[in-house]
Length: 102
Image 1 (cartoon, one colour):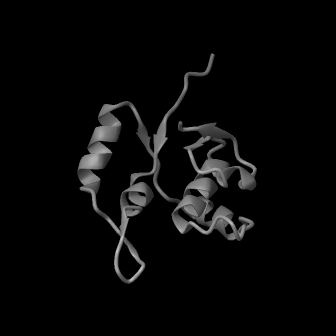
Image 2: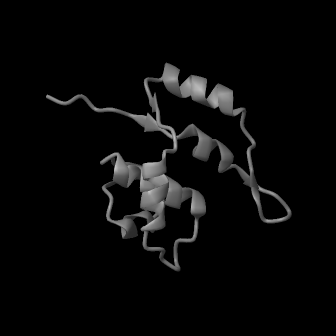
């Protein structure tokens, strides 16, 4: 029986913080602390790899979902044959398994 595996993409999630006046997102968290807390909670860290970036390049973008950070996470989800946990109603457009966060 396969045990559930929880993956965390802290580099991407950590950057996806608040929006600056210039419209760019900046990290509002201590990424090292976030990663440490994820590992302590039983998550496996998931690095961004060339396979993830290659999958991102083939991702079909949808006008109603323009979040580049989600796009990276969704590409990782597809490559890792994982389930994406989110409350974003548009994430289901990408053909990966979705688990509602709320």
